[in-house]
Length: 348
Image 1 (cartoon, rainbow, N blue to C red):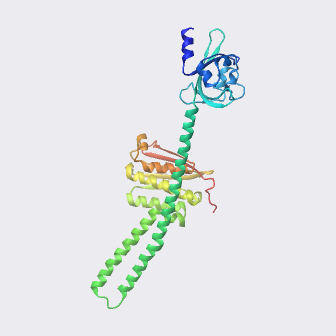
Image 2: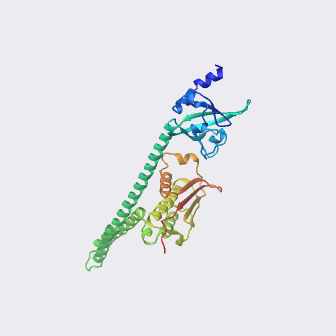
């Protein structure tokens, strides 16, 4: 047996050769084992007996690995196709094909069974989907808890503090109150005002009342104003109220995405201006947030501590949207978000 034949015979990969008529003229033992048959049964059989033609009529052997078959992704010459075992069972294989023109042209195919890899990939995909669903559920629970706490703070504790201030005002107006007591009451009144302001700020951070009372557009305006007041960074908001009439789930997700983007800019960007643009195109909302700061590097987005970016992505993916984060053409960082709004639109 020639040396080349010995190499093929003992190769661990399945190797077969076929002529232009799609008839197998050579098969090694690994190929026979792959298809659960024997070399003798394979030789002289049609190629379609062991490899499924994607379009039903592959033509010459090369058609089995090009027409209608998808790239396997490992090498440019690899194609993912379907194999057929001797009992008719179908299984995924990855193969590459080459043509030899010595005399009558024939084709040599090298194949690998990728069933186990496919099972691992499918398992990872299921696990990834489950983690995504868990993340979305946790986000929902978190928002519900924040909303509940914010309402409790505003309705119960806020009313209690307001009532105490009213009682204190009546005491100050009472006749015969000693000057020392009046001075103490004025200090108490100032502390109550500070407590009420802090309570409103905490409740607003937990759940902006504008989301419930005015909708997304006014909540974003309030968020922009707070950002400018707190950090002194000019920020423009271009949006149309009519385009942002969305249900609570979408409004909350979009508000949190913008909020997280502004928080990241304030903490890391060293920016002197921010531009936000939200507009609807058909049934999609396009969000663009740009700053003129130091920019973002690919490695920044992969850091374990970049939880803000992770949270933004999870919210976008939970709405089956797309997000892109990268350097802006004019310097700084640009965030582009596309969110499908099917089922989230609210009629005026």
